[in-house]
Image (cartoon, rainbow, N blue to C red; front, side, top):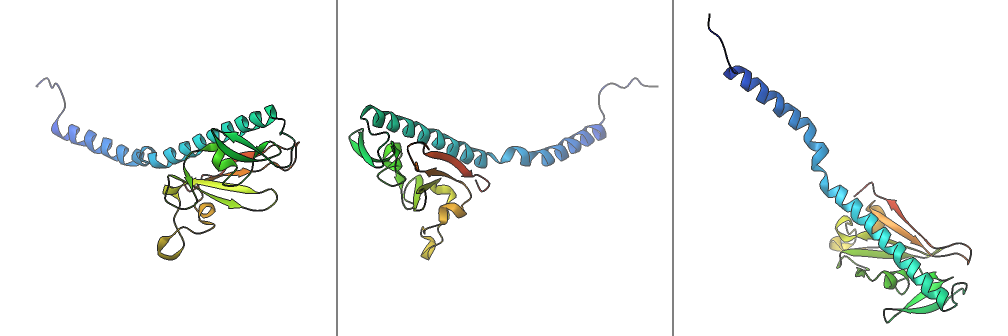
Length: 173
């Protein structure tokens, strides 16, 4: 009778096959890094917008404009339109206050769209997550919301209700 030490070739092959099967079933859990990165970027922009909102409101309070229905303050040499002390939901409001290189078409890293209503809102998204639905794939109104990866800024409705910024949808990121 021989004293056996080590693995046989068949045992080694079986272990490799089992590890391969485990790797194939576990891989999808670790491969979806791009979606996680888009969600993180969206939440980072949410933080940037909140910071810009608060800094602009502070500047408005210093100038005594925090309760005015409409006003303008200068932020980094640029006029920012305000509604009750918070940046207005417009290109000359929150988009100027954030100063992140937003564009109203797909020519920048971040895109925005102004939606008028009560209150006015601005939807913002990474251009890489927005697919143009216009002619030849050009950007059209409503494309940001259909991307399902965006955040929404709502202007202040009165001097008691502050402006809000929320990640409205991140299911399509």
